[in-house]
Picture 1 (cartoon, rainbow, N blue to C red):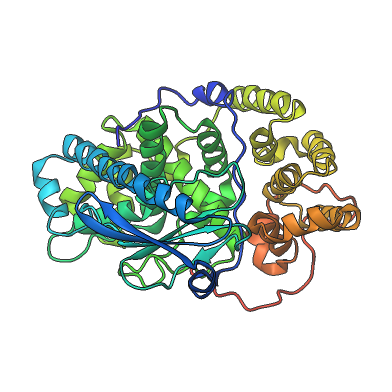
Picture 2 (picture 1 turned 120 degrees about the horizontal axis):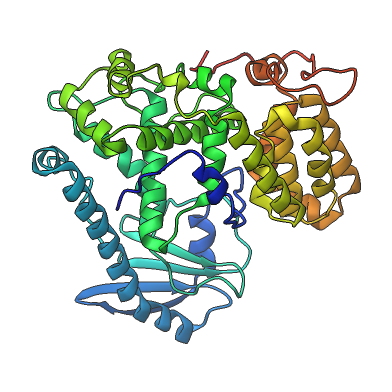
Length: 440
């Protein structure tokens, strides 16, 4: 990771000029190994370097396709090794020898063993999956003709989790455990940094949305109570609703982006100080604010004129059809009335990505009844293909869950503008389930 420092919060306006549509994320998980074992009936064997490898292929691949896939696995293996070399090299440059020695007491930066059994799969497979195949096995799915037939390195998708493991390894007598907002923010920040090195560009859309989310007072307050589920470091559990997690992850990234821009030593300097002091979760905020020289909650706020300039830039892009700009407009509650009409028009376009962008922007605005009415309007107009696409997308699920969240959504909805006349921001319905959120 080559670490990027910001120059000024006004760069948000410049960052907002780049735009890429986000890929859909699917909700629900299904084990694919049993089906893969049944369908992948073509088998070829060979070597990748000196390692014997077996490829099982299913329709539409034949033996020649499976053989080409096997021959290409060498480049895949090299890409993973190169990605790990990038991670190690960046950490060595920025952390220094003493902290790297702490990290190297663990296996977090060791290149994983190369899988020796592969399943090459094509066609329709679930959007959110998990693998339960034999040890040393893996899989690659080609769903459409546009998908690459050879796998790409998965390291970029694992940088977030790896960053958690690196942070924990900085402890000496016990794992370093910092407040969840700081850990998750650093993990997301590291993910963006790695992607910048890998792709040669910075994800301006993610940057802008994260900073805007951090600027929402309700999110800032909530982040300070965001707990690691077991307190001592088990970080994979998620006890809050997905719509809440979405806001908290983005807000945490926004906080770290602002710290990186504000602190003389940037985010890496903060990590070094935290590794020196090794505070527990309760003492970490004092260390952060000691470095910052003022309360954390006051940091990273845009001046009113800068917010106006950024909103106008995003609105212009949104009118031109740029969907990340549509989403980001939802984080301007002070201009909700002027933005809501645009977001509603986007939901009427009919393609799934546009609908998702529009309802996500409305979810960020926070008027649950307006969102609920819009969801019903979309469902009423949608044909079978659009219904299927939305049903498989967890961003749609998050909007539905937030619209029906009742009291559980009040922490965010109570600070939202009233757009659905005569109803207020909340649904008034009691929650369908007791709160289990660790942030309460």
